[in-house]
Amino acid sequence: MESLLFSVIALGVFIILSAIMGISNNNSGKTFDVLKLVINSILFLLMSAIWFSSIFTLQVATNTSRLIPLVALYIVGITLVTNLIIDLTSAFIKKVNQKLIVTHAYSTFLMTLSVLTGIISLIFID
Image (cartoon, rainbow, N blue to C red; front, side, top):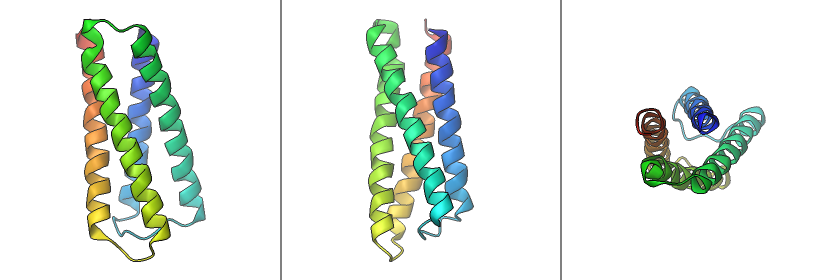
């Protein structure tokens, strides 16, 4: 199960990188330039791939002690989809929408908390 822990830690690192990228955009709500959009898309694809592999590993080796990280990773999946929808909506809407910015920030914060919960439960609950 060490590989599962390492993949969840890698997921957390990519989420933090994505959050730093969002903070560097100064929460302006402006769409990214092409380079930042490509980097954001690559980070999303990496996070999705790691998320899928972590979920698959947990479901194959599920027992009662693995329920907390499984729920935490499901929450990460929901927030990943939420952020994707917000990013796509923001890309097509040229007007700055403060509600989308706040929802995106809270969703990323919830994603980070969920990954931390998953990591802590994988380390201490076994």
